[in-house]
Image (cartoon, rainbow, N blue to C red; front, side, top):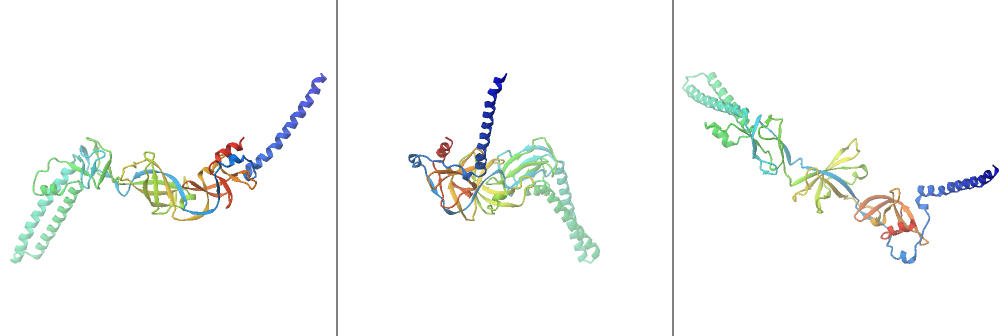
Length: 383
């Protein structure tokens, strides 16, 4: 029974020693994570070093850039929903999706009792006006011959003015239903208004981008959205910019817009920067007006944008190839030491300017960083 106990003693001692060594080995690793500038230097051969591209840091002036994403929408200043001006069933669709229309062009016709009522009201108003004109002329003639009292002449003038107002109101009612001047003139002259239909007309020039009604559908005046017409020569792009970058965005600033559909850049201009932030995202809404003469932008398309500030500032720039990511996905670069070795140095990135990154923390003027060849050093460091 004693022999197993004797053998167990060296095993326990060895285990305790191993734990102690492991505990001691964790201390420098923790410090390295906390302060990457204290990481051990490492070297490579002169032949390998000759293949590296080193960049000496100096303060340069540059205009910061930001890259944001956004969603395309119709230009709200050049698009509009078309509401039905009259009630009744849709009798015919005249303009389908994609049709380019002009102001006043008929989009659909409606068989509406409102139309028949408006025509009857206008005809009654015209008849009443003609009768009022005739009576006024007669009374003016009688008054000039001292055969009529002044009060009766004044009353006939009042009646004639009221008849004019009723006629004008009836004409406005017909115009509101979409009738053109030729049709209104024909009704005034007693021509038969056939068929008894009203028209839904486009209020602006543009393209029919939505059709929301069908033949036979019963629509309600003033509430039923029938079409959407938009001028597609320009579009809006709506983006959200966070507090770190919003100072770079100003009204009138040029924007390069990139889509996945084509590599061609679309040029835009910052049109509006909201004075408030979204309470949920804490971002500021920015609106860009984009040229769409090539018809590359479509509503609800997701796009990327590059915005370059007008204001210059000074700082340190390193090539994009010099910036790598560690196991914690944190950016770092390789910096040359005085003895010819290399340091693994974590850095804080600012904005991207073309093929360079702004470095806001971690480097200083005069230091040399590895540009081309940084990936090779990362591999060598792990060996």
